[in-house]
Length: 223
Image (cartoon, rainbow, N blue to C red; front, top):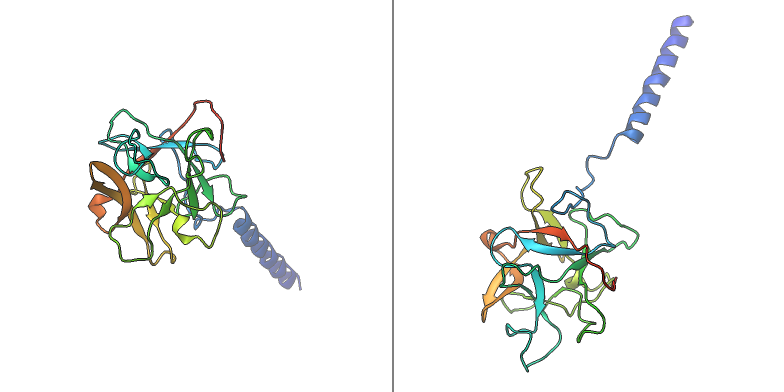
């Protein structure tokens, strides 16, 4: 009888320990958190520059013909990489589909939105999107004619993924996955009329590799 009681007690102890381990052990299947160039976790209420690993400046927006001073002024803007090496570009906010989420994880669907003082012209054109998708044009360029927070606007949702597996290399790429993980395209650079425009690419050698650098300057925040 004592043996039966002892066996039952050990069985319950093992079961409890197993259950407790499942509760306290971190979920290894959760996607990694995205980090800036200092190793700090990105958050949805901070803004960041997207600076390349080498060559050219950060990501910014342009009128579509390579110059901010052109009389051919139209909205929306094109999403481009600055041609000036020392230009950090325009900072962006990353807004997950679930607006309750603050920390940014890899492979999370999110809107990308430029930060800009609202007194500037075309201040409503800040959210990134893939122009002309789905369609027959090639390549599909990125513009700021997107819609924020609408799950049905598939062309306005992107993901951030690690560029490589090195644990201390915080280089990333953007991907566009309109129909889930089975259909993803990297975001790369296409040179058109002297502009380095961001666009979908099927060439892995053309993928835009960058790091996030937190914008610590003061200013009005459009979030």
